[in-house]
Image (spheres, one colour):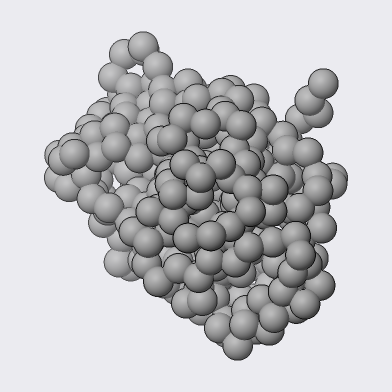
Length: 312
């Protein structure tokens, strides 16, 4: 694999997001920035991870993940496992959800991000590490979600988003109120005593958004050294409808069905195996621990970004 280490190395997933639009974006990027970039087309997540590792070994210092949150997670995980704090991650949002890009304050267009991806200095951001059973070991950059979140996001079709706009969160919640599974959980926040809850959803947020822009943790910061934990408890249909509305017009942390904490480490134990997703990467586990790693990954961020505090 021949490449210049001084160029921006782009790992492009052609299957992510709207393929025709992304193909046009790639053609425009090659036309406008061809001398400054090397494009590597990937055909699987394993291929993306392997290419990232090879690029780092060959001396690359700036790698861009072009695709959805899943591809970004794969590339970020590979950079972090290489333990190379001199390698910068750039994000070219071309997936469906683009939640990490939203948390970074980036334009949701790979073409519009290119100039900053090539030339801007990065901010050093937090990441989190997951350990659990069976054989779970992975880094995350934006959001860990467990419980009924997969069923909820399946309700948010493009038609629902277009018709309901910002209120699609409310509409999507209504769609799953009758089909929610309850998960008895034991939660341990840092070194505190275990807390027993019956949960519908659980979010561990480094960034602010999940599910294509839903403000799960609207006050989370990407470089404050904390994880924002949001637990949605079991409740009646009426209570859950009120909670969904609170997400649109109020502060959900004040709702009776919400447990909200800021932690450096969270351990979750479930009586049954739960479905989880970290930055869109799906897996199952009955026990896991999420631990914050402050100031671990250099990342290109948007010019005005409320989710990143100023760095000296």
